[in-house]
Image 1 (cartoon, rainbow, N blue to C red):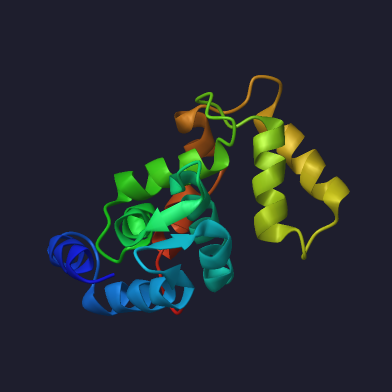
Image 2 (image 1 turned 30 degrees about the vertical axis):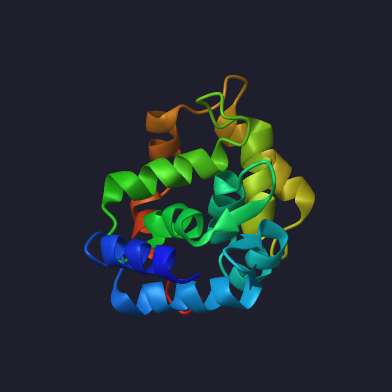
Length: 162
């Protein structure tokens, strides 16, 4: 986690993350890492307060499941305080488009609603909402932005007190 981490820190400090955000990511990575890599199954629970962070990390993970610090930082960039709205929206849409077909279908939407709201609403309500909003064809990026209060979501997409 030594010299390579320093290079990544230097690059990202100048980019999107505030210093306290990088310190938080670094602490969480070190808590899960064995050497230069941490297994995604050990990293994700450290971000349990933010389901979107969990999803972004899952998407960045290589097939081995082993993440480098740089991969973790890259995965979480859309949550950085200084990330722009387009980067945040692209990450949000990608997180909801589970099958990566360019549309958020009813099953994609149901899975994400369950992740975010599963403890607050009954499964039948979530499934009905997903089907109603996604319809038969699913939502492309523009329709997705119109169907949900995306601007409010983008504003709340931050590391906060993870």
